Image (cartoon, rainbow, N blue to C red; front, side, top):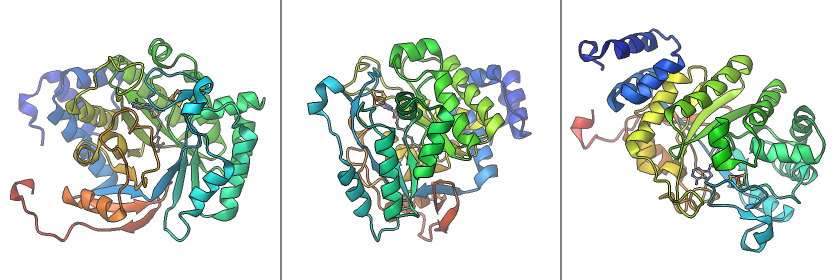
Length: 381
Ligand code: V47
Ligand code: SF4
């Protein structure tokens, strides 16, 4: 609980607004980033999260397909991609290999496949439309969340299609929703420094807007903790909040912590865990029209993901099954990210939250209830 009497007047006023359910502006958000303690923002974010979701923490049963790490772009923070000229050092999965990955989950209760990778000049719109159709023909009930706005923008431009035409075509082929990657930082000056050659801010937002108008939901990310400052983070979140006011098509906001291993920004230090928790808490407060806030555990690590549940987070993604390399190659602690459902459930229950398995669109599949085990550390109560 925040004791109002020891707060500076400006923070007291902001806390009053938040508790009354009012939206905070950019200036107030900056004040939270710069002046408020972690305990202060954490407590407010937790209150908001409790109002929205109570003690529920969502996860899903998913796996990733990363068709290739060959990429025509050269984002400086990326540890994962290989340029087309060096494609012999990377991987390119064939249609059959990807389909076999899907088939390897036959009989297992996964609900989502997340398809994301580099931007390969030969894997075009037709190729991916065929992949989507084949996946759906094999397993119609599997939700396909696929392709960042970066991948889509490249595919559509090459196919000479508008965003609307391209999304409609992929949707008809089996695409169900769009993941949040590729957003990075929308401020043009920082974007130019970290990922100059891929889709610009306006293009990223236009693709998500077009998807929402066609009835597809999507997520949104921010890559934080590198050379950006708080104003850049706020600018990024404001653009997303404004689009969400218009379309209401975003499900989840996902802050992604910059990791610095083996990339062209390895000289930039990674931010602290305190900064990570502050990012979650402030985004929960500012992004008042986003229903969900996700901590992506393969990037953050299990214990930190657990900690984030006290800072506004209500979703920790899914079981993953060791099917993504984006973060392990960038230095994340989780070198082979995979958790069984039982492990995810235990992780959530250990901090006195209620695990709920969801589908991609947050329909509840199973509520596991609170832990029935005795609490070993009474002070955690
Ligand atoms: O856009 C790449 C990030 C993203 C690094 O929508 C890095 O549910 C930190 O967007 N350090 C792709 N981040 C992954 C992504 C995602 C992941 C999980 C769930 C969802 C969802 C979306 O990974 C990229 C980029 O921002 N990334 N390299 C790095 N060194
Ligand atoms: Fe390519 Fe994505 Fe890596 Fe950028 S972040 S180089 S677009 S794989």
